Length: 240
Image (cartoon, rainbow, N blue to C red; front, side, top):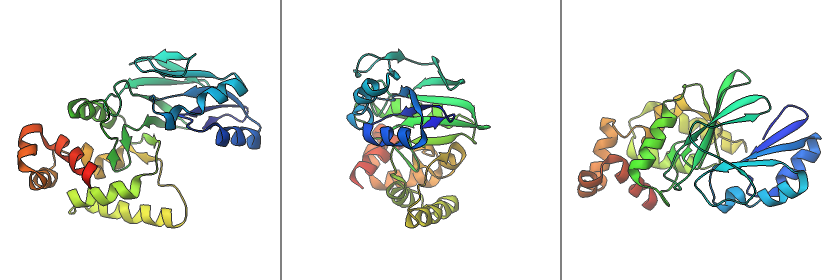
């Protein structure tokens, strides 16, 4: 949720009740809803929130979504509390997945990336291809390093276990896992991450690194030769 003390916007409300409770607790009016893709754990609360608040909904132009909504695509802009959020098309997890990026929210960039990029990982390829997902992740990795990565699931520790299996010699990854373990032990979120951190520790943004290439070849030399390192990593993660 983003708010200015009066109006609020939420991203990917899979359940209306927590949003309504937060609105009531902070005495906020829900002005808008941003949706990244069609999966029900991101959309199931939309209809109830729209009915209760009249909030305007924005979502991907190429996916089946709860109507009515404003459909947006690459380079469209959505004004959120006076801040311009740019739409970035990031197919892979789903065919029409989008992300929302703003260059300055409280003096630092923010990315709402749905299930495309996770801390230490990326989404499963339910509808897109490895080539599409790699291109989408490269778009996000090109954002400023200070960009806060607001993904939609707390999968960090499980992702980092896989990342360490792929790149055990990465000291930044070892240190990040220790930090995240301490956060979760204190019942704190590991998120948001940053683009700079993900460039340093996320194997799906580092598929050209020598140790990762060697690990992918060790997992399945034939698959790696046929489909490439990134596709091999995604297949390996699915089975991990």
